[in-house]
Image 1 (cartoon, helix red, strand yellow):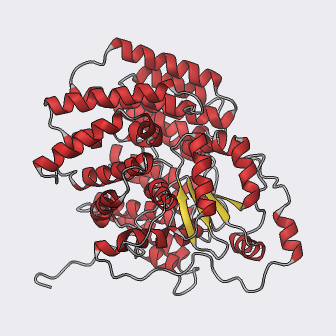
Image 2: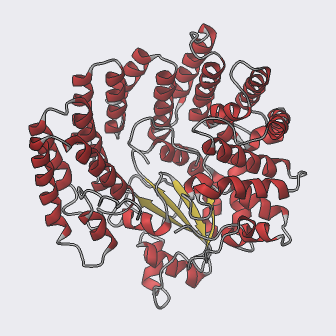
Image 3: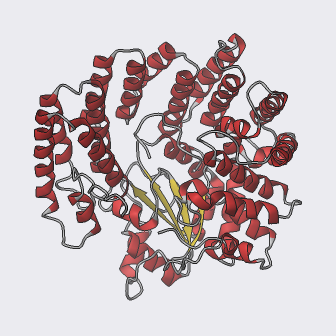
Length: 555
């Protein structure tokens, strides 16, 4: 889906590139592992049994067995496989559950494929995340019956368009990798091929198809070759190109020549006035204003004023909706977050207009009051808290989130946001209390380690001198990994690597802190020794708190 919008660290060899990008890498094997014979009849029967897991979105016959068994069933029945990787606490996941998965259109289409739900805290989930190259929650992937990836589906499009994109993926004659190659080699491309490339969720691809270093060249090539009569598809590819350019220029300046910049700005203005392009780019318009406008204009310039005005007009068009088009509740709230960002981009230090703040408050009140069910409300409150935070309405954000932790089934999620607010206000003791409580309340092995990481990182930053507390919490957090078979994969592995860096930096030049690090290293070593030799997870485990070897000058 569109990118996750969390402010806090609670989140979340590439495959072949376009031939035009000059890549010589070879394609990977199909993502499903060999499972031997076709599934036995009793396995198929188990797949159609309703799961007792209450977090599974209803109305969909989610597969009840493991992933390899699911691929075996998909192959034997010649059906595509739809994989959803998410977490119970994840607001964008909740948004998808309450919108896309809750529609009759999706539920009817789900009979055409084998739907598989992987919760990030399920046994083996993080290892599966490594296998499928997924990091951020949520990730949605459609596979062919033979295990080849057709595409990663976006979450940030309107519900009607999602059904159309899913239909395109189900009808695709070739997987996304082959389609990408075809576009780069000048092969014949059908409109459906361009739709597959345009609506591929590149933000959840994690560099497997297009590494970060090649995104400008690849999306620039796609943009040049996309038939301009395909307004919606080409506009999405153009936005992907602009976002890649903005990322490449994050250290300052624009990689575009003045004439190119002028042409790109003029094209963007035309798209911001196109109803078809506006509706095709819900997530781009909501989440990318400062990056794109900043890329194409200078502060205080006439070009910036025009782009800001055009973007605001496009957001107004989105908010009005129309026949067959409706934003979700969180998207309605996030439109105001985008407006706040545009206002700050144009006039950084000025107070926000009272009318804008009042409209934002009214939208939050309306959306949260009308949220149909716990998932919809969880996503809406998260969006509201982020909006209030960005708008400087910290007291209102605090009140909203404090009230919500009494109602939410994942209150620990909002406790971390409350810690962020307390830290912003200079109340570090309160921030640490919220982080401690969030860790204590967190559920699930991957989640508990992630929230434990938040707490320990907070201690290292806010009370670095409290070595006794850091040691105690560090040992407890690392203990979360002891009985988890896939503890050293994917999101958990990334957090462990980050924690290793923080602890090593904290201990430099302090003998007492170095002694704590030694104890934490010893605690983890016991876990590492229990992992199979040669296992990738064991290598990650053994690297924890091991300083990088110094490089030799001239080597």
